[in-house]
Image (tube, rainbow, N blue to C red; front, side):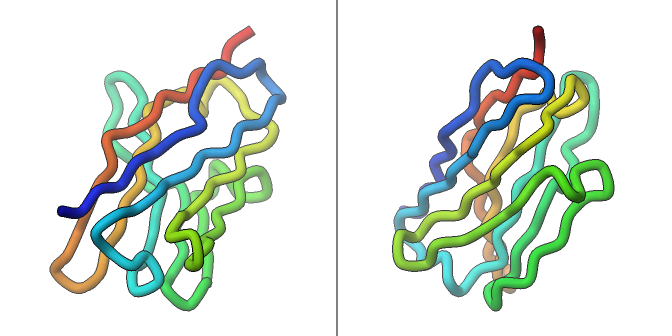
Length: 115
């Protein structure tokens, strides 16, 4: 059974940082394109950052220069370092693993940016 489990969300003040992690079981993440998506209340889910199996990252314009996606294939995890957070970053963040017709999602972790 495939599971993606996100952790690291929480409440942070504007300008602060958080590090999200996604741990996988049942699949080898090294074969997958990994991504973080987010969904704010009343909005559609949107792509935040993606990293290919070869390690090439790309980012939504709204997070470029502030967020960094990385993968640790040895630990079977993918991380999202989020700096300079602002209220627009408030959302539920989801981990995604995709390869060919396989597509898996985590349950999400809440990130709230508020003073």
